Image (cartoon, rainbow, N blue to C red; front, side):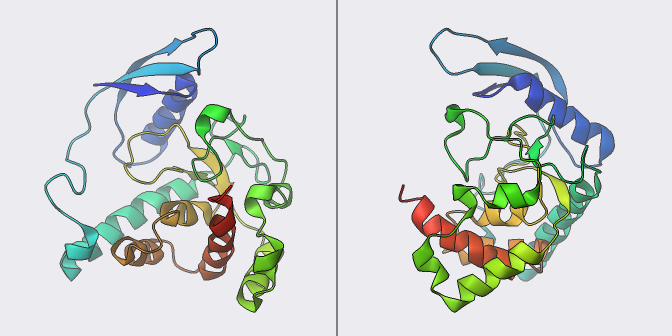
Length: 225
């Protein structure tokens, strides 16, 4: 299988191989990669990999909101196991928020990845001080948001390897060392109205209600920019 990417494909390959070597998460086995440098055009690369077993959820008509409770339980238990493995990996630095290879990071939640990498950020406090992590003043007038933001500012989050684009567990180009809640809030980004998706992921990543409140307040205005 050949997969195209608008990133530094060497970083994606390194992240995928790191996960393959240090966890039991089923990821594609990388065979090779080629970076394509085209003057005046975005960076692009081709990654050659073995096809992963299984089929995408939804390809045969499966939807989370139509699954039986037993199927949902299996889905939750499986993904919880995978992400517990990711979150058990030790970061290169317990303070720095960065891409998987300690450089800048990419995030579809923050901006178009073609605009280039962000950071790295020396601490989570510097990261949270950025515009893309700050609710608009009108949101801070809401007691629920203000309380949740205070909780975030007082919490010393563990920095974890985050997939960052949780639709498949195939493409690892946005893998980054992020605050522990980021995998959940990124998974819910633009999907809060899809209860069939939200409920299982809140079970996979319990205990982050305040972080979801803060991120939701940011999304309401960040999307509009």
